[in-house]
Length: 255
Length: 292
Image (cartoon, rainbow over all chains, first blue to last red):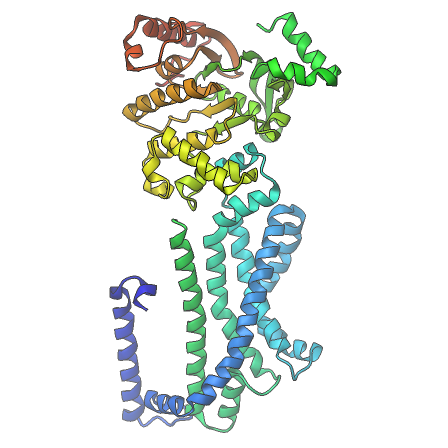
């Protein structure tokens, strides 16, 4: 963790804030005698979390896999289409309206429709929702990154009679790499959110979202919260994993 | 300045494909005949950047282009490099069209900004042209080792550009331009961003490198002493539209080595004044146009 964050100093203030918040939350629940269906105490949530660790874990695997498929498919498509759009002006112009629409559209709203299109007993619809949620920020950021190529580098590649694909591989993509990583990093936690929420709308048993609704329906609120905690951890894992890869790649290439 | 013979050579090579190679073998490095460049500005306005440029650069010759800012000297270099295309006249590089010369990689180029790729090491930057043209790894390493030695950066091959000073970055850019041993080097104010001390040092090194490689050089600068120190001929351009106002032969006796002593010689001073007179001399000259 230390290595990921760079300096230990940076993580102390948020850690303290988090602990203080938990403490106040606990005191408030006990002091004002707040009922569990309104707000369970952190210790109750923690207790349920550790008690049901195996099921939280197995459900996290289901949602995590859907999110992972979403990140992979969405990122590859987003980068690929951005490269094409950066080459062909018409595609860029055609896609900008669709992308603008996709940015304001709550993509999880498509989940019920997709469950209809694909079998509701398969994970396909959830993975598609996650892919779409990933695609948009990756596409937008990548396209922006590909436009950052310095004129002197463009002249250089032309002077050396580089082919279009050589130029993309040697100059355009490396220039855009920090932007691509920003896109994927933002998208990684969006993928988890999309995958969890998509489960609210149906589909097969299994997954954190499904477990949250089931536990809440059974009035087991501390357990529902334990699954929420699982979702938060899953989202963080995705975010930090991408961040770690980003730091490692960008550091090893010198800038 | 291009005589009847020069023109007929160009026409022959166009009409008779078979003799192309023969002509190319002794064609000058650069031949510009009545070259002009007009840029389309905003709202249909046209900017004449260059007009009636007639210039021949012989093989192995060092020619400096000098003139005030905005006189089109960089544009002329970009035309030779086929980064822009002339709107009139004819421009040939080693007897071929500028485009063909670019595709054949007949020239190496260095810009005012070093233009190194920051994510590549110094060695990888120097090897870039070789890599683009599919030269094998062993050969690339051998060549880049040679070039690192030539520009005095042997110990910095594995560093990234940001870890180098501006002067060192320019040396890397020059090494990269030399990677494929071109017969023509195009340089657009490569030392423009350097301090005077580094600049004079780099000029000495460049003179040395050129003497060693025997390449023809087109060197764009706005510094009179730099132009005179390096060049066999200094081409003085006038501002808007850019035209050749004068061509000054710098007559250092014989094949004199360009060292620091040269800067204090009488020939150096007389050539500097001659170039300066041409720059400021005529009635339409802009007295504030040149900074050096």
